[in-house]
Length: 290
Image (cartoon, rainbow, N blue to C red; front, side, top):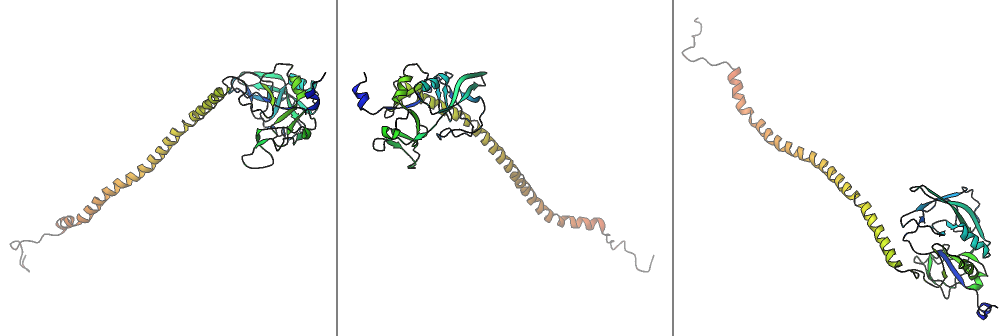
């Protein structure tokens, strides 16, 4: 017999997302496919079969059953569980996850397009995260409460106010609770899952951010000495020509002075060498006599 609460109360809605734990888990690099995976509309583009998605091992190499980086990717068994729960608005495409560094090709996954976006956030109870004051497409929520009347009993959909937010009905949650999933979180929408009931999650996340900051700093440090070395070389090259003219100008100044002064002593020497000497009075011959 159904409980009184289940008969009288409105259905509960939950948020479906990867467990917010980065330590030890694969991620997927953002795909360059042109299909609009957040639009909620059917994808009619010709896509590769299967779609190959590159894994990102920055945080580890453990596999998850759900990825949401650009394209929503789920394991085959998670898609099968959603179908068993009665979800019918999924468009799926075979996918293979690859790790080229390790030579891995992992089938058993599907790229998933959720058809339909619903404006279902209760404006009176929800607290939107809208830093740019857009007012239309909200980035996220500090607190999210779903209006069951607006949801109209949908089992799974994306929010119109926030396309990255995936909502599932309590009927879906009951089906998912029957199995163990790798890094899949289904929690009430008005509950802040960061962190969940996982010990040291916040510390791990801070450590990951610190490692990323250190890696960025290391990547930038080699470029600085190179640039300064190049600048030093450039300045040295520019300084060397300026010094040489400076020394030559100092050398030419005294040279110019000597050139101006030298004609005076050289003039008599030229007259001594080139002019005829005047004979002494004793050596002179009287005119007309030989």
